[in-house]
Image 1 (tube, helix red, strand yellow):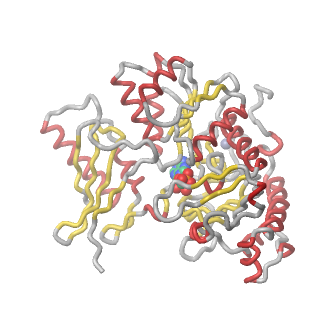
Image 2 (image 1 turned 90 degrees about the horizontal axis):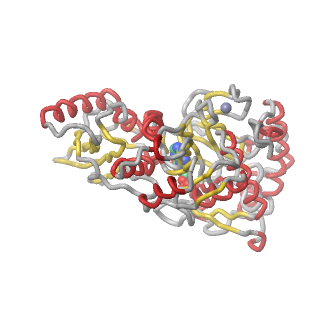
Image 3 (image 1 turned 60 degrees about the vertical axis):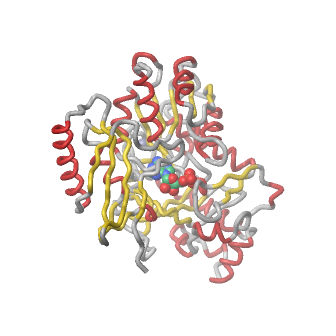
Length: 438
Ligand code: AMP
Ligand code: ZN
């Protein structure tokens, strides 16, 4: 590996737009042909009379029906596969908590391509074989564990499979092993920092940390800046989902100006979730992804439910792979309260603007005397006062700022540090206790 190169795979990363689209068309045609080996897709194509030869241009992707999470559930566990089970070497499943989990199968070739994609992302943010990479995310079925493990090893870094939890041990590892980069869920990073403060560990002084990879759950720009400030690092946003392998799908470059989605691996579409028609660049819609180099289980026009928008297709870093805005949240996460649509991330963005508040918060929806209400509990920061009058004053300010953002007045409760639950997996930000009237 040439340590001085900006790119791990220059032949793909620096393709022109024409080059990307040419490769995408070839790979799309091959994928559709390969999907004829999947009983699920074969039947789908026959129902609408679609033949692989009908895909003549990239726009023809729109002739292909969407694939949904429900399709994965209906064919649970192996029904969408395009290769026999004996050719598969691993399966992962999503972190969903309701119904059948969704299962994704991988051949060895799929795992190699996945490790390459993750290695490419890590290289893009400046990590090199000299770095020590600590993966503080869950292992097991959660793809953030093995996904980053193999990617970081592929790059050649000393990789520490610390997994999530046991925060004192995490901090000891960071200090003893000279860890320079950590991958973790953003809510866990802030918890790790709280424990560092308790232990008298100052990351800038006592560790070699300089890069954090944060992802797997929605977080605001304000949250990222806060993490960078408290840990004294650069923090890069990583997007992935188990249906698309896991991490390595979209990743920020050092410009930190949107996530590059690797278009040699995926066709990216943003559609209106109601009409399912494409929306113009810059407009928010649902992210739809088609895999271009998957063997065991290609997915065509997979509706991710994640809401975002296209920011651009060029970047000062020299990569022309589409840049996607950070996720607004999933369409299923949207809170509809008294007819108003609210995303938890809007609330987070406001809370993070107050240095007096910590990063841990919880939104509870409840029905009180037939009225639906929202309560926002947020922990106060370490050094802030316990003076009642000042807390009251802060409460009034936070409430007003939230009202200006979400157009409803929530009940705000400022609670002591450490009183809200911390999860080792993705943070639970919303609890809905509303009465449902039939
Ligand atoms: P899973 O398949 O269990 O890993 O969950 C994938 C989902 O996690 C995605 O569809 C997104 O909703 C969410 N997600 C993953 N990475 C991010 C990120 N960087 N920002 C926001 N949401 C994310
Ligand atoms: Zn870039």
